[in-house]
Length: 180
Image 1 (cartoon, rainbow, N blue to C red):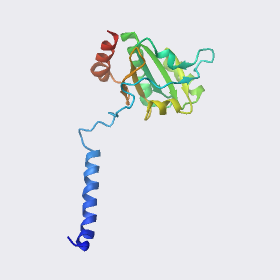
Image 2: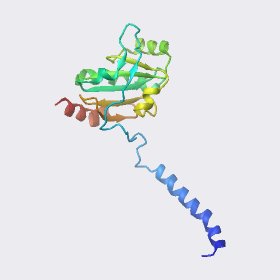
Image 3: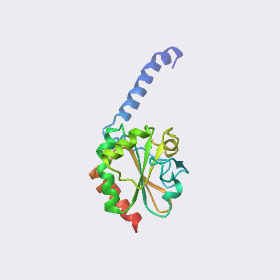
Image 4: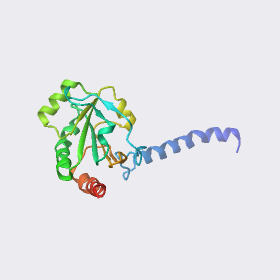
């Protein structure tokens, strides 16, 4: 193939490559919420966050040891967080697990108002105002929920709002298995 023909074919090949990549990204069977997590099977990152209640203790990695734990990243300005909020109460009550909240890049007064209005399903709430802990967890946005085993190892990540279907289909079997 001559150089001239190659130069004519190159734009067509690049266009075909771009079209294929776009098709793969928009494939109907692709679940955009199914983000792989580098933390699955690894210990939770070490952290220590100031509490929402100034009289309470900090939320830290040590709080997660010894029991199955659910960590929920949320924010007062997040509409899907409000929609999933009642389900966090359900998880804590139905499975007897500690549910910890991490308010991500939220104003403390706004988080307090949110909890006052919605109630608190959380054992403790930490304030991640600069987002550093969220980065360590690999959080892409709120809400995100993690399930940890008794040893503080991440066993599950959900990067979308909780729903009754997700709880029944994915979280329930996992929490039951971890409780054994």
